[in-house]
Image 1 (cartoon, helix red, strand yellow):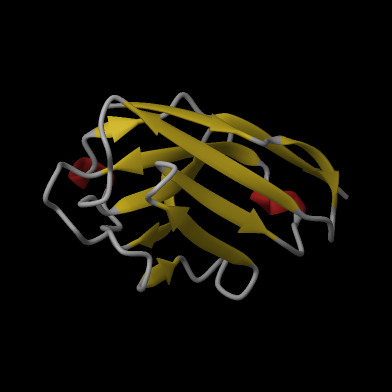
Image 2 (image 1 turned 90 degrees about the vertical axis):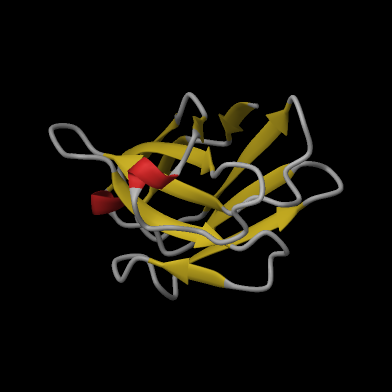
Length: 125
């Protein structure tokens, strides 16, 4: 499985961005997926996750109510809509996929088998 994240960029505080993650290699309709981020000098942290069918999502407290994850299994895509962005949201954002047949998301990095290359989001104050 190969993942390609895109959509990052520079935005002012309070603005919005939509990140996309395109998967190739095989379909991901039976996989939990997640978004993580890593700010300079910090560890990679969980942002949110989505269940295989898109019904259930879970978010870190820091982004709850501002970020929304969705997926389109027919297109093998997962999205991260980010609203009300803050300077502390500045980071490289990564999409990740769990192993085939693992339907639920996880908050743990080690539970994900495949990672995209990351896309940089910079929020200016």
